Image (cartoon, rainbow, N blue to C red; front, side, top):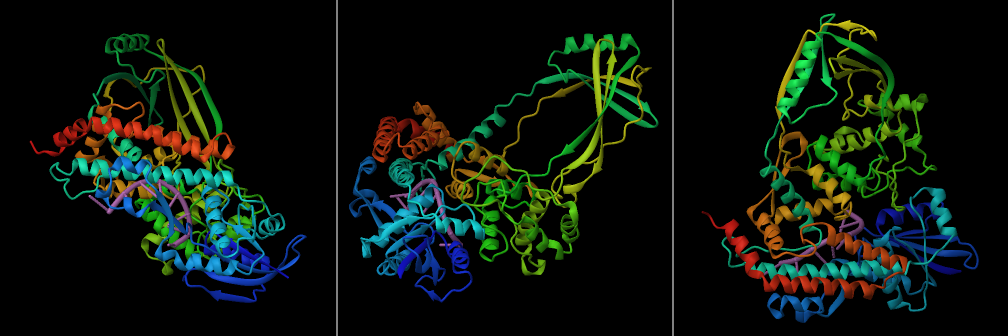
Length: 616
DNA sequence: GCAAGGTC
């Protein structure tokens, strides 16, 4: 009988896959040197030519192998920062991963086949090559296969086991290019600018880091700050009509909205008054609905967590991680906003019927209210949307955990419910030569809104009856004056949305980048009650962005374009259009030129920092 | 004393 070693990216997947393949008959569960990892032994019948095999299923815990510079470049004074662009690098297993690596090597020793079950995304493909290398160290002749799966539903996993594929070397190469570039560019610029600015007041003890994600994130905050600061309010004028009927004051808005030309508005307003009467042009009733939300992704969880729960994105992710490891919710790092057709969503809804808070609603879904969730447009092919997998009694969780869990559950139940339905009434007026309108809403069926308490959709004041063709004398018509308002400082949900839209970081790391630029004292977070808080840059943060902008680069270091370019090059590696070395070499040359330009004009950056950091 | 990416 052949021995097959299966390796997943994380312990939870190993456990789930072992459960499905073994049919519940696990011969042996062995502890390893790592407290999270277990080895599961069982038999499984693979398709020919393998047939019935003795299987060991285990996992790593994310990356096992790290990259850094060779020893002679590790200390900051050992070399010029610019030397890091082509300094020797090395891979190694960090002390906390020693047992993980040893487990793979020793389990692979007597296996004929290594079957890789890492997540089916780019990082997973690379982690798969780490596992392969570790296994081949002890068993160079082991045959390597790769499972293709996108969720851990039983039938899906069994199908994956029956259809072994191969590792995608291009995707792994793309990740390796990314690792090398981030290391070289990040370390070179970080050392250089830290040492350059050390003599500036207040920065003597501080690391001033550069990272391809940190800087664009900082750039978003500075950008908004400048827009707020440079904002010049502009006056505008409008016309508003009010008519009192059945004791209701109905306000009508001007079809033109508002104009910046006072005289023009004045003339139009006078014409209205001269006309004396207004005429009802149309009264239109239209069914309308408010759509239930899409299945929950990580980015959405972080944005809404900040908006509705008043928790920072990082805290939300830490809590979600904990709820996941305790088996209460599904994997919290996902880009997918579509549920697989095969998933038994009703079973998951059923588990929530015992809740005092939303149990009745869940019961209602079980008794006919259920409706298949909408599909979004994202699918990472690795994880389903975030959803509750078990019911948890509220007294088992602390206050913040309870709120995150509750959000995940309510969101899920909302997805499985129906859109809210209502009816709008739109009344259009002609008054002089101008058009006016008003709209009323009656909510007819609340549906998902009953459980998704975060969305508001309320009936506006009911409109009195107006009849098409009717002519009346408006109670009041006024010319109003307003002023344009500056935008607010950047909030956390807005920042996450910007990062997401511009490809800065991944769902798993966006919160870390935000935390990092706070730790580096580039930005401050002002807590703002329930909406989560807003960011403004420090003097140092502004100085860095402005200093580099003053030097002047074709592509700004604090804008997302450089990162986007790197992402596009990675895609080209995946498509086979470029090789890893093409990408690494061309990017290194590009950054080396920028680095040289920066060092030639270091006085510009330094002067900028001095200007912002020296008290007047 | 550097990065960003996994995961715990």
